[in-house]
Image (cartoon, rainbow, N blue to C red; front, top):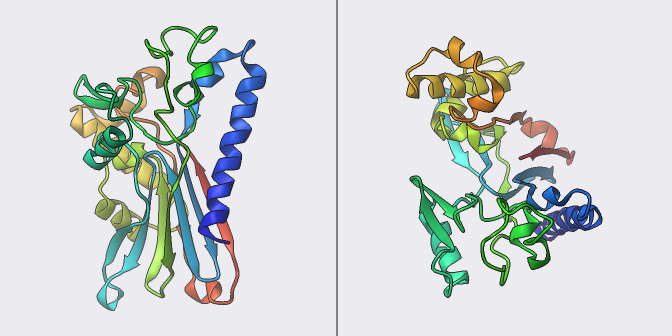
Length: 258
């Protein structure tokens, strides 16, 4: 296990999806506009490897002094145009493109289309041969694609696990839009293990309802398509850590599709 192994796994996944898009181009051209964030965690030999594309997030819950409190430690780097560092990175990579990032309806988007700067798929923003018919015009860039505006290069971090590391939250951006890292680890710390991911989802939706000044129960009744105007989709996995078990050189793996 190494950072290079993880990077190669992401490349293989990207190449596999590109192959599918190529084979399906004439019958299903819309696949060229499909994409996903990806967040991966691997534990091996007492080390935690986290690799990320897009704006999902991994947060570690660490026991505080005397084990009476819980503190968050963010393990992943996000690739979203709402982050100034990401916008500067894009402008540096595309110095001749004044529209590489555009503020549209109060939201920063790459080419005015997409918020994430790294993903699996979205090949119409990576390969010029897919930014044309038969892909429908509403998905295409108005001008020819000169070079990729998105990449599938993951950000990877390595963390040596410690006795105070209690759990890891892997979640899509729909959770983090409404819960801070501190609030999320507090919820996990104060709830039973079973069903704790559902507790996080419920807390995020309750916050979304509060922001829109409607009742939680009423928001749950809103049709799925319209619900996207209230909150993004939310995927959550919580992994509880057993330091003694991991120190015996066992390994485990979890992956969260975006």
